[in-house]
Structure formats: structure tokens, C-alpha cells
Length: 253
Ligand SMILES: Nc1ncnc2c1ncn2[C@@H]1O[C@H](COP(=O)(O)OP(=O)(O)OP(=O)(O)O)[C@@H](O)[C@H]1O
Picture (cartoon, rainbow, N blue to C red):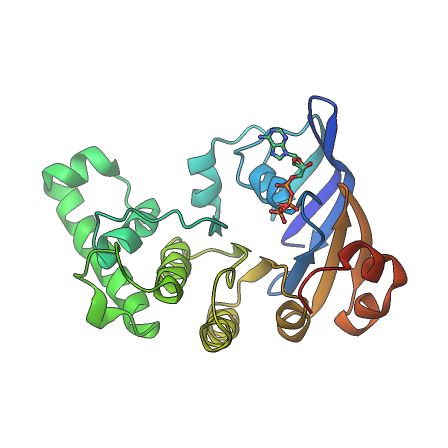
């Protein structure tokens, strides 16, 4: 199993954001995580990436527990994520933004890398090779030296995925990858995710409100509502589940 979550519970004061959530993800699985606003989807990603501490529960990734790790250690273990609101550095070039992700492969750290000393210079070259390979694969190489600021929203979404891929993840967490995109750009991101999935073999969890998109893309759908898991299964079954239809009513079809 790639990921095993058991009894995960998170509270914010009186609000229970996640309530005894169990979830397993097999290697290479493409899972859609759906649910209405406030269901707990982002909180689940925050727990997995150690930005948020659960009050109870276990999270196991491959052979190790995630609880107690620092966020940077999660990336080193092979988990990468993108953010609902883009987490790019607007002043850095496209290549530099992606290199931030690739730095988990360097052992000398940012300080030595900045000074370009000894081993770190070789690491820097290796990181640049990894980065440019990803940029080329995602048709972003012509934009490599362009500042991330002012690029179209769909391109920024692709750069975020490229940066997550630079971690060479075995588990990729995508938080609303098509939010704010038009139909063509959303279809483009769908192709990128499918391509990444088949090329990398990584397990992927996609949080998305667009039900048609996520149902068409994923092998399996998990639905949260008010912090509880209310459905888990193949898209056609979950899509017909009255509890899911009830919870997600009003979500764009
Ligand atoms: N930092 C916080 N402080 C207090 N409450 C929070 C905090 N973050 C999330 N919550 C609450 O926890 C619950 C789950 O929120 P979360 O953002 O995980 O939901 P979500 O499913 O990702 O929603 P959306 O689809 O709107 O992004 C909500 O009730 C939310 O108001």
C-alpha cells in the first residue's frame, strides 16, 4: 500500500474538520477526492504534508509513519503537492520555480548551493538537468527564463505541477488543479495529469469541485462531507450515490 490513513481526526476549536477518516491508496492509483466547501479536503492534504497536526489517527506512507516528520522531510520521502491558491514565487523564473522542487535531491542544501561550492555545483547541474527535462516534457522549456509573474493562469497551474514533479514523487497531491480555468485549459491540465500518471507511475490524489472532470479522470472517488468519509468506490457507483448527490448538490456538474 502506498498510503494508509486510519482514524484521522482534526479539530479547529469547536469545528471537527476531519472525523475518524480512513483512506488507503495503492501504488499508481489515481484517486479523486470530492466534497462540498468545508468538507475537509485541504485539511487532509495539510495533514499528509505535515502542515497540520491531527488530534488522533495514523498516517503511513510506504514503510514509514508520517506523524512527527517535518514538512521538508515529507518531500524527501516522496510526497509532493500543489496548492489551491498558487504557491509559486512570482519574481523567480519558471525554471527557478521548478528547481525549488528539485532541490530535495541536493544534499548540500540551499546555502551551499547559493555559494556554488564543490559538490553543490555538481548538484546544481544535476538539478538543472532534472528541471529542464521536466520543463521539456511539459512544453514549458520555451518559458524557462520567463518570470512566473504575469503568465496565464493555466500556464501557472502547469508550472505548479512541474514543480511538484521535480520532487519525483511517488505520491502526488493536486489541490484543485483546474480552479479558475476555462474549458480548453482544464482539458489541457487533464491531459497533463493523465500523462504524468502514466509516465511516473506515481499515486495521485486530486481534489476538485468539478465533478465531470474528476469522475472522467480518476479510477476511484472518495467523498468527504463535514469531515466524514461518506463514499469510496468507482466513479460510476459514487456518482449515483444519493448521499454524494445530496452533499455535492450545487457543485458544478
Ligand atoms: N485554520 C483554520 N482555522 C479554523 N478553521 C479552519 C481552518 N482551516 C479549515 N478550517 C475549517 O475546517 C473545515 C474544513 O476545511 P477545509 O479547508 O479542509 O475544507 P475543504 O473541503 O478543503 O473546503 P474547500 O472546498 O472550500 O476548499 C471547515 O469547516 C473550515 O472552516
